[in-house]
Length: 202
Ligand SMILES: NC(=O)c1ccc[n+]([C@@H]2O[C@H](COP(=O)([O-])OP(=O)(O)OC[C@H]3O[C@@H](n4cnc5c(N)ncnc54)[C@H](OP(=O)(O)O)[C@@H]3O)[C@@H](O)[C@H]2O)c1
Image (cartoon, rainbow, N blue to C red; front, side, top):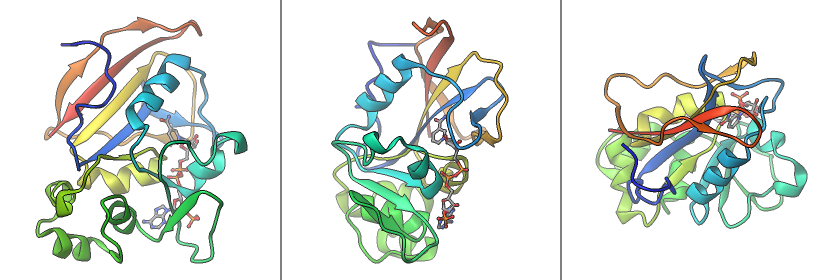
C-alpha cells in the first residue's frame, strides 16, 4: 500500500490533518512528554509539517524543549483558554475553531457555528473549503486538542510504535468513516523499536 516515502505532501490541500505517534494501546504521552525516542518519526513529522501552519494545545507547546520552539519554518498556533497567554513566535487562539480559522487565513472565528457560517459547511468539509485555503493545517497535539479537532480533519497521519510504555494521554480512535489509504509497513528504528506510519483519509 506504499508508494515512496510518506512526506505528507499528498494531504488534502487546504484541509486539516492530524499527526500523531502512539503505542499499540493508543498512548501518546506520559507526564507531559512523549515516552519514547524515534528519530525516524521526528523526521517524518518535520517533512510532513514543514511549511504548514501547526496547531497545538498549550500543554504540548509547554512540552516542547525551549530550543525547538517555535517549531521552525511553520506558523505555530497555540490553543489556550487563557486570554493573556503569549509566547514569542506563537499565535494564540481561544478555541480549535479559531485556530483552524487562523490557519486557513480567516480571522475572527470564535466557535464552531461561526466556522460553519464562514465556510458554508460544517465540519471537515467546511474547513477544507475555507476560502481556498492555500495549505494544509496540521494539528500536532496533544490528546485534548486531537479529540476537539478530529471532526474537522480529512487526513490522519498515525505512527504506531511497538513499545510497551504506559502513559496518561491517549490518541483519539478514528471511527468507521476513516479509510486506511496508506501503510508503509513495519520498519525497524535505529532506536531498536519497531514502528509503522499509516495514513487515513475520509
Ligand atoms: N505522541 C504524539 O504524537 C504527541 C503529540 C503531541 C503531544 N503529545 C503529548 O500529549 C500530552 C499533552 O496532551 P494534553 O491532552 O495533556 O494537552 P494538550 O492537548 O496539548 O493541551 C491542552 C490545553 O489546550 C487548551 N485547550 C484544550 N481544549 C481547548 C478548547 N476547547 N478551547 C481552548 N483551549 C483549549 C487548554 O490550555 P489552557 O490550560 O492554557 O487553557 C488545555 O489545558 C503530552 O504528554 C505530550 O507530550 C504527544
